Image (cartoon, rainbow, N blue to C red; front, side, top):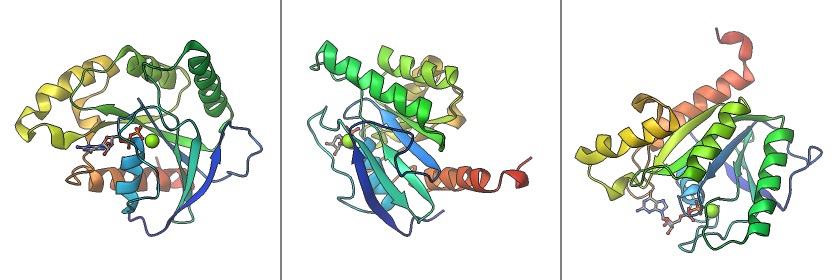
Length: 202
Ligand SMILES: Nc1nc2c(ncn2[C@@H]2O[C@H](COP(=O)(O)OP(=O)(O)O)[C@@H](O)[C@H]2O)c(=O)[nH]1
Ligand SMILES: [Mg+2]
């Protein structure tokens, strides 16, 4: 698919079922600083649609974007930021729980992990949560430009082991050189078609 229009809709400090977001939702989840906001900007071909930061832990809000007047892209607050205290972590957990339990329009999650590192316990916990909640997800390995193409498999293998996915199921992605962008857009297009026309899918 092509993204023709993208606009910012709202920032929510918390999620409630009766919020006026009633289109299919694709959520972007991952550690702080993994590249969630940058990925959204890259997909939409927009530099500043979504605020990015070199300092982790800035996004504490659920940011909602409208894509092609068709679906919502949801930038969720990141996890795994070492410097937040227990109360903040608890607040994050409650916020995420509420989102995943109440967002009846959520159809898929993009789970972002850094291609350079083995998934952290937080990454594994998040992934286990999606499985337990029966939330379909795709693992995206961000910052693929930081390693050579030849070294990709070496980095992907431990990610596959930790998150129990097959190498062909995940998408290496780079906002620097655009790799993975077409594949991800194609994947999203297929998911949207399935969501909109379920009877056409076997
Ligand atoms: N080299 C490289 N840097 C990236 C990439 N994606 C994000 N970054 C950088 O990583 C930092 C965090 O990105 P951001 O999108 O704000 O992460 P978020 O906290 O997950 O939303 C920023 O300095 C980005 O420029 C990428 O694909 N390649
Ligand atoms: Mg962000």
